[in-house]
Length: 309
Image (cartoon, rainbow, N blue to C red; front, side, top):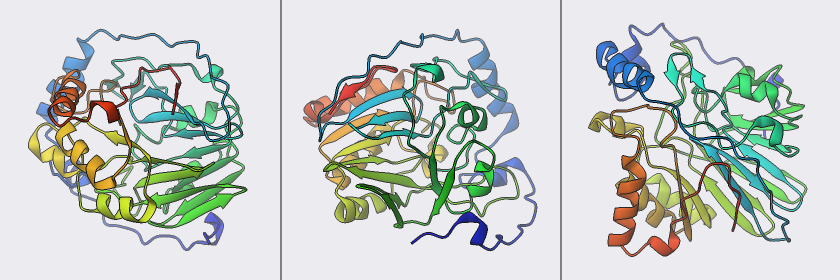
């Protein structure tokens, strides 16, 4: 059973880090390169894509509709449950430009029952988006992140450690490990991070959050047996970024470890967060899927278009 946020003891204060480089486990922050590759090149790149007016399908019990909003943001719909994961509708994250617009508008979302937040990074935990959501009821997030969710419209905030679950009625979410980090600001490295397995109506959907490849995918597959795996495939170049992110090659390896039936890629083509071309991750993923005879298990979603599974 999880403790309410108010009953948890405050985390110990951390020493102030010496530089932005210390904020990331991969130690890859270099101000000049960062500005040239991620800020300047993005400013010169025209923003593309248009929000769609979604036509949400009529579902029958046991069916699930998944709408990719963009980046790591998804809408998961059942007959009686609407779940948002890492919603982010921003066109800017401070000085980072969104290259491809969100697939739909906030005003076109259905009623939201649950919001799952994998970690506190600004591209996954976007406060302006959360404030504008249509009456979210429950927010589920890692331990140490609940204080950030105060006054954002949630009627209940649940914090979980790895392998802890929260259930209500006949749906359940389990918080799973990942290979990443959770700091939002320089001094708050106490914050948790991970992914979620959502279980409802006999279906199991796994959202990995941000993660490098690690052996934990095998344990997630063994313990929770997800059917649909939403896996990140971008932000892997230069090689040091792979300490906290996966490329398509490692995403396919993680998919095999999970023993899932369907791979849905994410975390590419929206924000320029690394040095590879924005179009490279999906192209490379398809190339690998063809070579390894996995095309029948790969579902490439278009932003804003609900797909029934």
